[in-house]
Each structure stands twice: as C-alpha cells, then as structure tokens.
Amino acid sequence: MKNILTYIEIKDRAPIKLSLESLSKASEIAKEKSTESIALIFDDIVDEEVEKLKAAGADKIIIVKRDAYNMEDFSNTIVKVAEKYDAEDIFIPGSLDGKDLAANVAAILDTVSVTNVMDIKFEGDEVHYVTPSYGATVLTVSKVKKGTRIIAIRSGSFDKRDDLAGKGEIIKEEVDELKDLKAVIRDVVTSTEGVINLEDAQIIVTCGRGASSEEIYPLVKELADVLDAPISGTRPVIDDGVLPKASQIGQSGKIVSPKLYIGCGVSGAVQHISGIENSDFIVAINKDEDAPIFNIADIGIVGDCKVILPLFTEEIKKIKEN
Ligand code: FAD
Image (cartoon, protein in one colour):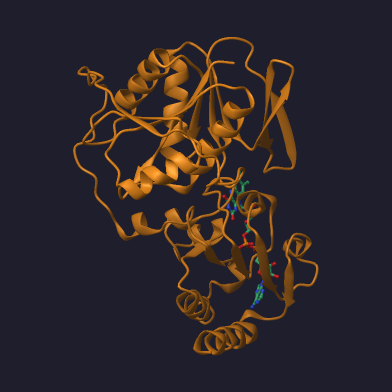
C-alpha cells in the first residue's frame, strides 16, 4: 500500500471534527501498513491545531495557501498533491463540500469515489468499504478494483484520535491555481442558518413533529438554551418552516455524533435514525410507548413533552446551579 492523503476541511481556522476523524482512520491504516499519513490543508492554521493533526497521526502536513474554497481548484490540487506524495488512497471528510470534492477528484482521475464510508476492512491486499443504504437498514460492502481509492468518510464513524503521534513535518507547497473555472464563488453570505454547527455539537436537542407546536416548541428551545445546545429538527419540522433546512438531521440532512442527543416528539423513522445512530447517548421523549425511537434510546421517557420538558429543564437547571 502506498501513502494515504487526507484532505482537511477547515472552518474558522481549525479542522472540523470530521476532518480529524478521517485523518485518524487514515493514520491508523498507514501505521498498520507502514506507509505515511499525509494531511493536506488549504490555509494556515494555528500551532495548537497543527498539534491536533500530529496527534491524529499526520506524518506530513502539506499547506497549499488559498484565499477561498473552490471545488474545481481544490480537487485539482488534491490530485496534484496525491501524485507528488505517492498517495494511492485519498480520504475526504464526507461533509457537503467533501462529497462534492470526492466526486470531482474521482472524475479527474477517471475512477470512482465511495461516499458515506462507515467502516474499512482488509482482505489481503483488498480494501473493503462499508456504506449504509436505505436509511442504514442495509449495509453495502464495496471495493475499488483499480486506480486511486477516493473515499468520503461518514461523520461519527471513526474515533478522533489524539494518541497517534505522527511526525508532523510541515511542508509548504505551491500548486498553480486553476484559471479556467466553470464556477467562481463571488461572495459567501452567512445567514443565521450557517451558524448551526450540528456536526461538531456535543449535545443536540431535536424537535420532532410532536413538539413543534406553538405551545411546545418554546419548551424545547428552553431546554436547548439551558444545555447550551443547538436545536435540530426532523424533516416535517423543517418542511413546516419551524426550523431552517440547515438544522435537519437524517438521511437527507446532517449526520451527527453528539455525546448526548435528546429527541422531543420524534417518532424514530429510519430516515431520521440513520443521522443519529452514532450518538453516544440517546434520550427520547414521546407520548407513544411504541414509538420506534425507544428501540435505540438509552433512556426513553413515555409522556407528553408539554409535561416532561419543563420538569426536565428544571432538573438540569438545578444540576447546573450545584
Ligand atoms: P412523526 O413521525 O409524525 O412523529 C411524531 C411523534 O411525536 C410521534 O411518535 C408521536 O407519538 C409524538 N408526539 C406527538 N405529540 C407529542 C407530545 N405532545 N409529546 C410527546 N410526543 C408526542 N426525516 C428526517 O427526520 N430526516 C431526514 O433526513 C429525512 N429524510 C427523508 C428522506 C426520504 C427519501 C423520505 C421518504 C423521508 C425522509 N424523512 C426524513 C422523513 C421520515 O420518513 C419521517 O417522516 C420523519 O422523520 C418523521 O418525523 P417526526 O418523528 O418528527 O414526525
């Protein structure tokens, strides 16, 4: 096996959690196969963040300076760096941008990308990728028969490691920026939707249809505020305009992996569960004792959110005060 290159997506001058999860897995494999784990970033990052890349096993940290994200230029640069550093595997965090990049990198290299990778297994020299299908009710195993293996990692599938002690050699590379771009980002407008960072949140409170009424929603909001947690929603809640699209979790929304997920009035449809199953601890409040979410909840509270939520919030306040 040759070297493994991981593209590190940066937000606010720091790698996003999924970048560190992807790099950690790449480094684990690189160590096992006695190859190098190489991290590629497109911006300077502070020393503290460089340390995190080293701790996640990066032997080399390649910096190619860019002012702004552009899918075509980033893909082209990833390919150039992979070629120069002899990387046969390219790991890309499976964020919205990451999935775009993976497909485009694959197109440049005339190969395929495997998206949503939640496990990687080896059979001799063959690498097998496990991906979820049909809302994670079926797992698919795929392999790339030839060419560079480009994979987009699913959020929360691998641990973010801080004990892999890569060499962390920093190398500044110059790669010519692509000139003839098909699309140019002229401006990035950040709405309040943009600040919802569910993927990195430690605690998430989710509002389902059963808690989205004018009467109950403020109670969900109060619980989220006390816990200092973002509010996410199921698809019907987004469709009804109670919460913005950026807060949707599930098959057609975001995949999250918080330490604590609290679902209020969420039934537990597979399309929602596939986005939360990597949560460490799941609490569900639902008035229907047969709601499917109770099958995966660590704690299930059968009751009306109108009654339960004020009690819940009160208890959390007491704990915080003490
Ligand atoms: P419901 O299923 O209507 O459940 C509401 C729950 O609230 C019920 O269990 C009820 O018992 C409970 N309840 C009602 N009142 C109260 C109360 N006062 N107190 C306590 N409990 C109460 N969904 C997603 O979430 N994310 C996705 O990304 C997504 N993608 C999809 C993609 C496709 C292709 C399709 C077909 C569907 C997708 N869906 C997605 C929709 C999904 O199938 C479900 O319809 C949705 O998740 C249900 O949302 P819900 O649990 O809020 O609502």
